[in-house]
Image (cartoon, rainbow over all chains, first blue to last red; front, side, top):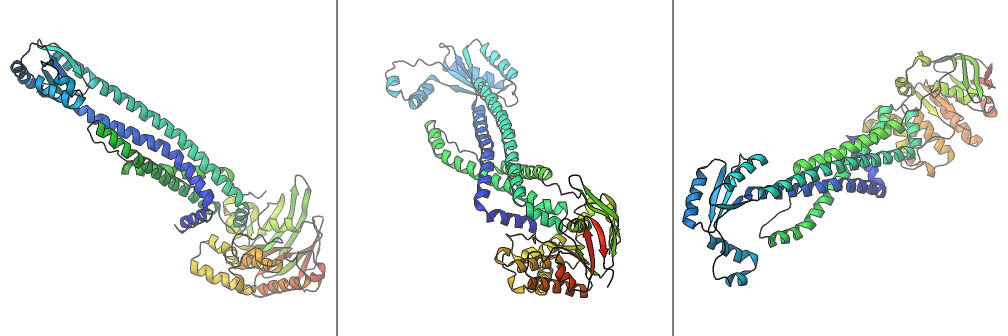
Length: 296
Length: 222
């Protein structure tokens, strides 16, 4: 433990090179970590939509509200539908008037052109696309139904895209992890070169190879940890800079959306990964460049 | 303490540095190793410190056959001897204290014990007031004494010195030899390589002479 702190002190005695290495590691790790946060937020956003994803059954224009209410009652009895809400034409028009910004144009209308709509939300256990399709077809087969619009389709596409993006982040993360490994490895190699005479003296006074190796491994682990913290700081600062515009955008959609941060589990994962990468990088470098001078 | 049996060291590029050397140095002895530069003095010392392995023959140190010593045991062998070099081999970015403390840090001693022993060693070489100084600020003689303090701080039974007075004027050289004599009086075995014949001649110690890798004379025990 004392040795680990001593190497930390050694790092801070040359702050500029240390800072540069830490910054490189931080930036390399901040990129996948930041993209991870973005996909996480998109995924959260998507699951918010999924709950509201409903099938809108547009009834034929000649279906009266009373008839529609009866139909809604019948549909509620049915399996596969969690909720059926009747949206009367007046109600729909009012909503359109309030939200679309065409209030004046709508006021010009002499009669309400909107049909009765039944908003049906599939039951939670209906999860697979095939089952959703079946429910949709059944609703379409109703004699009163004009057409059915499913909001679920694009949500599913959106999810597929998020999934793709997540896979991309993973690949990018792997690539940049390799970069971190090389950066730490190279830094440790230079460190070993700079301290060559010290290493020789240590060998002369009877230091074991493990004893000589240890400070370099500590150094690598510290680089990893500091780089991970730097990455976390970068992501946090970026998120706080984005929160304002995101809130304003969400307000325009009349919702509220708070950007989720990295989260504790992901933060620990990030720091764990960065320490492991630092340790591995230095370990590889030490194994390659710190072979004890062998008496011939 | 040290026994050489028909030891030959051959380098592929320069031929034999040491040829068929045999001698024995008892525990508690102090001896000089002389000869021209290139006669094999350094190589002989390096064989004892296991910085080199002999091409032929056996080197025994402290009853241990160095030829049979596995690589992982080499550090423990080196802890039992102190080595002093002409170029001091000090770490210029560390204080005198840290330089002398190095062998004790390697041994894993505690903070307090290290401080006590380092100060004792610095006191012996007369540099107690320089513990916080950096080696560059010291004179050549002082640097050499720091190197000596480092070699004896772990109280090894055997001390090897390679041209310890090589760069020093006669007065300083005599002073360093005086230090070695004092260590010898408390039982340390010393083998000192030096080509300073005029100085050695004034001292009553056994002297080995190497010439072109061969042991050509041994003044015998005194």
